[in-house]
Image (cartoon, rainbow, N blue to C red; front, side, top):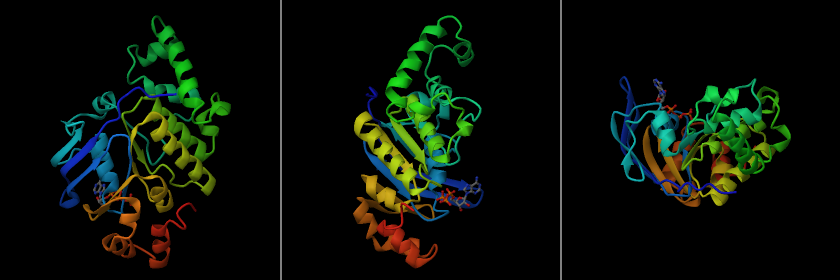
Length: 276
Ligand SMILES: Nc1ncnc2c1ncn2[C@@H]1O[C@H](COP(=O)(O)OP(=O)(O)OP(=O)(O)O)[C@@H](O)[C@H]1O
């Protein structure tokens, strides 16, 4: 199984975003290397979701650039970014609950197909052949890969939370992403579901070579699978580097200590309770 798309490099340069008088992001710069997993972390309100929404095109930053392989995409709409190879998942699952797993996943690809969605759903004209090919490809490359063969004809609404999150990942993979943006991929999952999802994210990197940027609060999972970690606090980058470097950075420890129960947060930073 392969994704033939070349992984993208992402550079965020001097990005600033304000909501009225509130500066959610101030002059933030960082890079995501092609084929790496980079985690964006930070205490509540640090600006992670705002940054994620700027990268995927839902927010327009007032200043700065977001470069995909050197090209500034910060003025492009989300569908234009999708065509460039951006795909994302959402913190709150965004799937059609009444539709089957297979149909939800195939919807990811229709962003790229020549035939429109209506033709595809009615199997009309040239859409019929393209649809049959797509189905075979999705079943071979994505459904088997994510081990969701047994549920492919079930409506998404009937699935457990962990499986729904996996279907969302599948839908994003169906877009053949060059950069995959994961918004809290293990939020609300139990330990087993978290470990499964962490393994699948690593597999996407290793087998597809896709560039991955994720926002995640689960420190154990972040420290286990990330190549690079960027830490935001009050809308600014306070540290970035290898997971173990960031973990020991006094500014990072101080930022987390200021945001809750110190003992629990020290444990989370050390990764001990992260998978709970
Ligand atoms: N749509 C909005 N309108 C006004 N203020 C906003 C909006 N979205 C975010 N903010 C503010 O911007 C700042 C950064 O919020 P953001 O949600 O990006 O942080 P976060 O790091 O994702 O937090 P969390 O971990 O709690 O999700 C916060 O002060 C927040 O209140």
